[in-house]
Image (cartoon, rainbow over all chains, first blue to last red; front, top):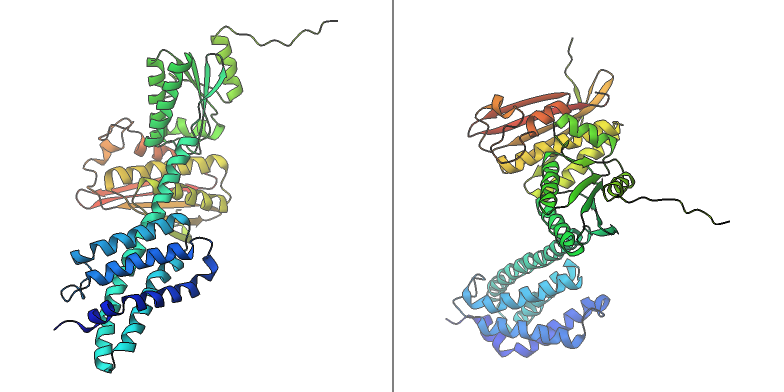
Length: 284
Length: 140
C-alpha cells in the first residue's frame, strides 16, 4: 500500500510551499532584514521539494535513510549559514517547525478519516522531529565553528612582535601560555629575529596570570630556541608573587636573564648593545 | 589538638579538555578572592591548582574537581579535590620526587604543588584512579 500522505504531498507540493511561506512570513516579521523574502522562498522551495521528492514508503519512518541525505545536506547548510549570520536558535527552530505545521495542516485538509489522519500525522511528526534535531546539531556546530575561529584569531592577534629599537625585539605575552600558544609565539619571534637581524628579544610576561611548570617549560624552550638563533633572550615582567611561586615550585630560571619590568629589561639590552641614553644638553 | 575543618561552600567542576583549564583557574581565583586571600597565596593556590589539573588531563584523561571553602577555628581556606579515573600512579614516592617524570615534563608538578600548599594528600590505585586533595589557608 502506498502511503497516503506521500500521495497528498506530491499532489499538493505547491500548496504546502505557499502555506509554509505564509507561516514563516508571520513568524519572521522581526527579522526581515536578515533575509529577503525572495531568498527565503528559494531556500524553502529547494528544501521542501527535495523532501517530497525523496519521500517513499520505505523511508517515511526512517529519517536516517540514505534517501534523505540531500534533505539533511540542505538543512545543514541552511542552519550553518544561519548560525553564522547570527540567527537565534528560536528562528532556526521555527523554520523547520513551521514546515511541520504546513505539512500537518495539509494532511488534515485532505484526510477525512480521523484514525488515518492521526496515524499519518504521527509518522510525519516523528520524521520532522528528527530533522529538527539534526538542524539543532548543525546549528550548534556552526556556532562552535565561530568560537573556534575567534579563539584562533585571539591567539594570533595577542602575540605581536614589536621592534623596540634597532636590534631589540619585544614580545608581550598576555593570557595563558599553553602548548599551541607557545608554538605561535616561538614561530613569530624566530621569524622576526631573522627578518630584522635582531640580537636581543625581550619576552614580557606581565600579562600572564600564573606561571606553572608547563608555562615555565615553554618559556625555557623559547629562550633556548632564541639562543640557537644567535640572539639573547630576556624575560621581563616577573611580579613578586610570581617570583615566590616559581621558587616554591622549584623551577630553575637562573640560566635566563630575568627582569622585573620591561624598562629594566630594555636598559639591560642597551648595555649589551653598548648603547647609552643621555639627556640632551641644552645649548645656551 | 586538631579539629576537622567545616565546609562552608561546595562547588564542582568537570575538566575534560585543555580549554577547561583557564575557566577552572578563574573559578578557583573567584573563591579565593571571596574569602579575602592575599595575592601571594592566591597565586600559589592557582599555580598549584593549575599543575594538578594539567596532571589530571595529561595522565588521567580528565576528571572532576571539587572546590570547597573550608573553615577551621579562625582560619579559612580553599580545599581542592582532584579525582580522576585514570591509570593510577604505581609508585607515589617516586612521583613525589623532584625531577621525576614519565611524560617529558619538568617533573615538578606534584612535589612543587606540595610545597605551594599547606596540606597535600594523594591517594592512588593502579587501574582505579588518583585522588589529590590540597588545602591552602588564607593566612598560611
